[in-house]
Image (cartoon, rainbow, N blue to C red; front, side, top):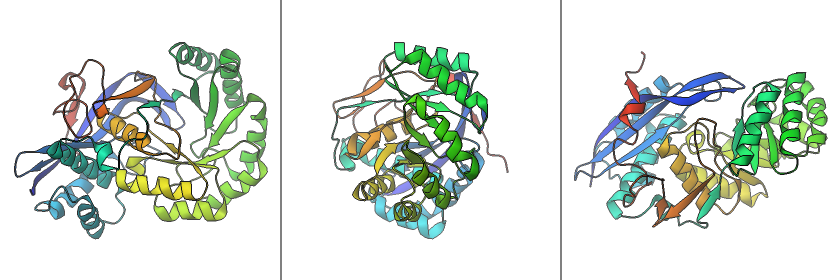
Length: 368
C-alpha cells in the first residue's frame, strides 16, 4: 500500500451563533481538511481548526504547509505513521498544525484499512464515556449567567469562562456565573495570555472567592518564567496552554514547576501520537493533563475525544462551545457514536466522505 494523493482544502462553516472570546468574535469556523488516498483506494480524512490569535498559523499557512509536505509523502506506506512523521520533520520544521492534519488522515486511513478504530492504534481506550466541558465567552455578565444556567440545565457540570484582561468586567462575569449556578458547577477561568505578569497575581487573588478549579494561561506563551512566578504566589491551580508547544516547552514547564496542569491538543502538538507522548511525559512528572479542544469539526472532535479515552492521566476533556451540542461522547462498537449517523467500520468514526455536510460548508482556495 502506497500514498498516491494528499489533498488539502479550506472549508468555512458557520457557527449556530457567534461566540466572543478573548481574541474577538467568531461567526465562521475556518478549517483545513486533508484527504489522503492510497493506491488500493482506501482513504482517510483529517482536519485542524485554527483560531486566529490563539493559533499562530492561518488556514492559508496550514494549507500551504500540507501542500509542501504532501510531495515528500507520496509513495510512502500510509500505515507507517512514524516514517511519515520523520519525513515531515525532515521536510519542514515546525508546522505542527499541518502535520497534525496529515497524521490524523493517515491514522484514519490505517484504521479503515484494518477495520479497527483509531483508539486501538493508540493502544486501546481506557474508558467508554468522556465528559465535556461547557464554554462561556467574554460576554456581558448577565448573558454569561444565562448561558451558564442553560449549560447546567443541559446536564453540564463544569464550565470555562473567558476573561480578557484585568478589568472589572471580568470579575463581574465570573461573579454572575457563580451566582447563577451556585455550587452545582465547577468553574475555571481562561485568560488566553491577556494579563501582564504584574496584573496576574492580584487579579487571580480577586477571583479566589469564586471557588475556581483552575486558572488558565494568564500571561504570554513565551513567559514560562512568569508562569512559574505566578504559580508560587497564588492558591488556585494554574494551567498552561499556549505555552505548551513542543516537547521541549513541556520539559521547561516541568523543570521550572510553572504549572499544576497542562493542556495539550492534537493540532497544537503536531498529531495524536506526539500528543499522547506528551500526556505520558506530563503524567510522569506529576502534572494533571487536559485534552483541549475548541470549535472543531467532527473529525478533530472525534480525534481528541479518542485521545481523552486512551489517556489515564487526563484531568478533563474537549470543550464544547455554544455553537455545538452534546454533553457526553459515548463509544459504540469501537468508534465514537454520533446521533443520527450510521456507524462506519474503522478509523475515527463519523460520517463517510466528505466528512462535512455540503449544505453547511463553503470551500475556498487559499490566499497567496
